[in-house]
Structure formats: C-alpha cells, structure tokens
Image (tube, rainbow over the protein chains, first blue to last red):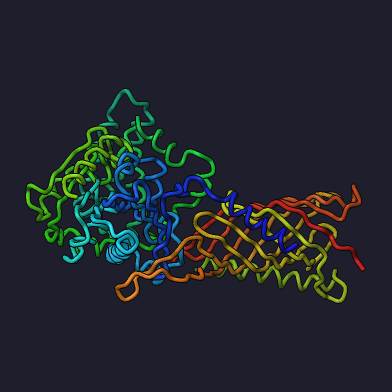
Length: 358
Length: 193
C-alpha cells in the first residue's frame, strides 16, 4: 500500500510537469529567496556563453514566463544565456511575502533584482551581465542602476524597452494619446454609430475625470478605466498582431488554466492605491536617472499608448551615459512590446548592442 | 481580511447549526465515520493531486444532510511545488430522489504547506548560499458546489461518486491568491453496526 501511494505521488509529479515551464535538459531552474518571497528563475539558451542577459518583466504583477512562452528572445538564446526572473507578487512567484504590500515597490524590487544578479554571479560567474527592463521592468531597472553606483560594476549594459522611468510624464502623454484617438474615432464615419458613441463617451470621461493624484486610494478605479481605454485604442498591441501574440503566449487551455486569476499579482501591487509604488518611482527613478552612466540602448514601439514614444527621448536626455554609448531605436510596427511585435528585428538590435559592449 | 473572517464565521455557523440539529437526527449526538472518500484533486483543474477524507454526518434529515470531512489533499505543480493540505470540510447535501444528490455548498478550512521543487538560494550577509528551504504554510479556504450519485439503492453497492468544483483562497503578499479547485472521486459508504 505504501508503495502504491508512493508511485501515485510520483506519477502525479511527472504528469504535472507543465511543458510550458520546464527547462530543456541543459537549462536551469531555481528559486531566489528574499523577504519571504521565492522568485522562480530560469536560465535558458546558451549557458556556456560568457554573456548573460537578465530580463526584468513588466507589470507590476505580470509574468516573465510570457517572454519564453512566446519565444521573444529565442534568437538571443542561441548565443547567450537569457535569465527570466519572476518578480515579487508576480506571475508564478511563491511565498506569502513579508510586509505584504509595504514591500511592493521599486526600491524593494531593485534589491530583489540585486539578489538575483548575485546568485547568477555565484552560480555561473559570467564575464558580462546585461540588464533588460520592459515597461515596469524599466522602472525597476532604472531604480536598480540609479541608486547605487557599485551596481554599475556588475552590469555591462542596460536595455530600456518601453519603460516607465518617468511615470508622471508618461501618464500625461498616455492620456493625451488615448484622447487623441478617442476624438478621432468619435468622428470617424466609417465606424458604427455605437462605436462612435463609445469613443465620444471616452472623451467625455477624460473631461470629467482629469488625471489626478495617483497616490490616492480612489485613483485605482481611474487607473483601471484608463488602462482599459488604452487597450481598446490598441495602445498595447497593434490590431494585426494582437491575436497572434496572445494566442502564442497563452493559447492553450492548460496555460489559460494555470494563469486563471493571474490578476492576483497585479491586485497585490495595486489594491489600496499602494502609494509606495508611485512615491518611490518619483524619488528613486526619474530624479536619479542622471546617475546612470552605463552603455544604454533605448528601444521603443512607435504606437505605445500606455508609455508613449516621447518617453524614449526623455530617458535618453536624462541619463549621463556619453553620447557615443547611448542610442534610441524606434520600432515602427509596435505598440508596447517590440519583442513580441517585431521579434526578429528586436533580437537583432539587442544582439548588436551586446556584441558591441561585451 | 474581512472576507476571510466572514468565511470562517460561515464555516463555524454551519457547524453550529448542524450540531444543534443533530440532536434530532444522530443517535447520542456522536460523530461517527460513515464513509471514506478518495478523489482526483486539481488545483486550477490541471495541477493534479488527490483528496482523501473520512466522512461523518452531522445532520441527516429526509432531504438535507450536512457532512463533516477531515481530509488530506495533495497537489503537484511542476517545476514549482508540491502542496499538502490538511483540514476539514463541511458539505451540505440535498437529495434528489434515491440516488442523486446536489452538493450546493462545501466549505473548507485547511492548512496548506508548499514544498518547493527546485533549489533555493539566498543572499545572507552579502554571501550567496544554497539554503535548505522547508517551504511555507498558510491558511487555505475553499467553497465548492457539486453533484453526487449513490449506487447503494439501485446496484446494492456501498459506493457513491461525486464531483465538486469551486474556488479557493490563500494569503498572498497582503491580498489573496485564488485558484479553481476540481474534485472527482468515490466514497465508500461504511456499513452500519
């Protein structure tokens, strides 16, 4: 009986090996623990490479697994080791999290990031580590690099992708972006009347609900509505790319079930307003960006509605990296995520950057 | 946390009302194991596991019954963790004829312990260490609904099959993490003395 039980448990473990998460035989998976959180970390691609690329995902509260489920960095994985890290209270990260929401902010996130980098250095001792931050990951990597000069010694180059390094400007631009499209669509006679009315109501809503103080518990309803309007105005994905991308990231039933209630990650970050997120962003990101002197590659989607393209120049101007070592590349067929919408070209420019500075 | 407290109160109140009612229905008011259940358990349906319980009637009337089930449940979600749960569930059953019963509500309260399935590293005083991590535990509550079919009347077998589907919640970084929960299994009805 004891053996039957043992084999049943073993069989369950084997059948529960979700193929979407498992590393290939030569790849690595482990946890990094900090403040009662356990962060899943995958090291994929060419592990014998001396060059490691750490991907810091968006959100907050999203998941780093979306990138490898999509194959967003597959070309880079041929040459380099690519590290996918699941942040605190995000995706499939584990633990109950000491301090709860109190520790869900860019400051703690950058300390978590440092712990992951230290573990990578300990396990692999790579010659070079490059840091890539997408969206919220752009906030977090800005905080990581801008607040501690010693961290520059651990990182060879920074890749900022549609990042939220200047949240206040970003939100002003985002509201302008949605309003402009809403106004245009509300007067577009090729659209159905009910659609024109919808966009007309959106304009009215922004008139009645101007961008306010985000450090306010009541702001959460506003944020949710704004994000919904950005999405409906195609500010996250271009319409022609949307279905293909979402199907590839979470197209199968098993993955949809694994991700059921995945909003709980974002819920942990955003519920009750979570003032520490916005406060820390102002003081440790935007205002401190001048401390960043690393080689930097700034990548942006032309049609981003949540963090519009003007932010690329803002980031470029704020960092103190010499002109020769910083550049901006705009992806013309992309909204918020060039690694999904223009995967090959995105991989190519990142590879070029790594090869230049490795 | 208010929702969590309300859930516990609801669980206790079901137990209390059942205990009051049982003086009419259960001889000597003693809890006795009258069935043993085994089921497939699926966290978010697809993370497989099993469920084992001892089932005790708290109240049995012509149509309605309340059963209390101390249980052990196991889930596996690789490469992340295996989880063990121990606790108790209260199931209200409403009979539809001789064999079918609705299980409109089952409420459960458990301790859930997750054992991580991979190495864990921690930076301690500036030095990276591979640590022995025994996982972590937390409270787990669930609410499910389901159906049951008894083979006793028609086939003279002391067996029932049941299925339950619902939702669970556990603490997660200051809020709650939810999962779908799915159960499909059999209950062996023990003979009366």
